[in-house]
Length: 373
Image (cartoon, rainbow, N blue to C red; front, top):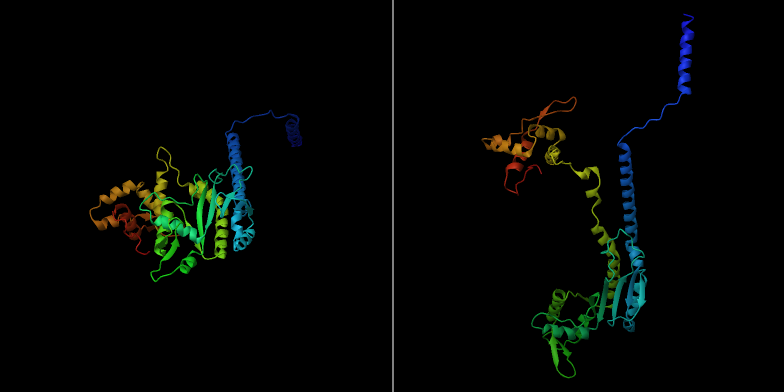
């Protein structure tokens, strides 16, 4: 016994010495996890880069950022009117750049967005068009009515608009201040007509009524894509200009949002749906999900239906083979449903059986499946 103990102790010490004194030869393992890890890191890097680009683009296209780069050019002829101070004061409170520059059309305002330098790479070119400009032309009531008379006397298309300059890159809008008050001031008869002096060569008068003016407005909208704003005062015009400027500042962000795919359609496990392979594997899961879309259908009930009829075609054929309508409606009613632990097994029931049967056999698209809804 005395000799056995030292032997065991010596053996233990020698074993430990071999473990410490000898190095384990290097080994290499071949595994697909390295490639998968690199691919996962690459995908993660691309996803983070895409998310960063989206955040940068969204920040650059925010309404406040675009508004600070929005330039409103005002023709000097507008400043000659006494009410123009109201307009300039309103533009000054917006935070956009306001310039006093001569325009191609006298008494007009022009909006243009200054592109970022450089623009975010993830922003489509459609969001930052180079020549997208909006222009608002202010007309006196006399000038507008004179042209309206000419348009009302036109027998058919094409309708020529005297305010549209040829080859203009800007989209034109018209604004007339005090048209209604001017027409009422020119009212001289009980026939509700207003007399307008024609050119000096004709030395005659023409009459135009308010319904004819409305007809001209419709013609301009339909045939020339030209909308006319009728305002009563400079205060009302200033409110419209401010609202229009804010709408322009929101346009790039809305266009960028519409150009992007919805995140919940391209990402997320729940949005990916049931994967179906080319060999057909996965179709049973799709059929199970379709059963689950019915109201008050639990996963256990869906399992019972899919187990008995692995495809909708098999269930539809079984329904067609039934002899009577009552047999068809109760085909699934007695299918057993596995209960949870401690619960008694149950059946699918006549209500769910009836709804699934009607769904697969009816030809009436307006038929109500769920009577309790």
